[in-house]
Image (cartoon, rainbow, N blue to C red; front, side, top):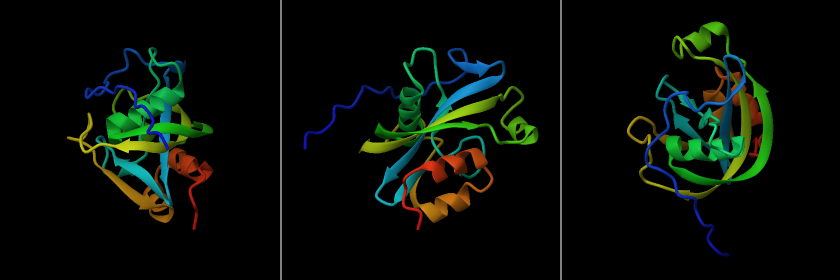
Length: 164
C-alpha cells in the first residue's frame, strides 16, 4: 500500500481568536478529532486544566472546513497527522456557565463538529509538545477521564471505537 502524502504542517501553533469563525455571537465553531487506532483512542493533555481531553480548536477563516481544523488541531496538540474517516456530527456546548468561565474571562460557548480520524503518522515533536502530552488508552479509560466533559464524552460515544 502506498504511503499517503502528508500536508505541510507548521511547527507554530495558532493562537488567539483573530481568525476565528463563529456560529453566532460569542459561540466558537470548534473542529475536534477523535483518533482511533485498533481499540484505543488518542487523548491529549489540556494546557488550561489538569486532565485529558480530545484534540479540538477553532475553525479558522483560512481553513476550508471543520475537518481541516480538526486535523490541524490533532497535529498542533498531539503530534499526529491524520485523515478523516467519519463525520461524527455537531455537539452543542454542554458545560455550565461556571465551567466556561474557568477557561478565562472571554471564553465563549462552543458548537463542536467532531470527526473520527485515522492516524497516518505520529511525530516525536509537535508545536505544543512543550505544554501537552499524548496517551493512547482504552475506551473504558477514556470514558472515565471524560466524565466531567459531556460534550467530549458524546463524541466518544458516537465513535466506532470498540466499546468493550
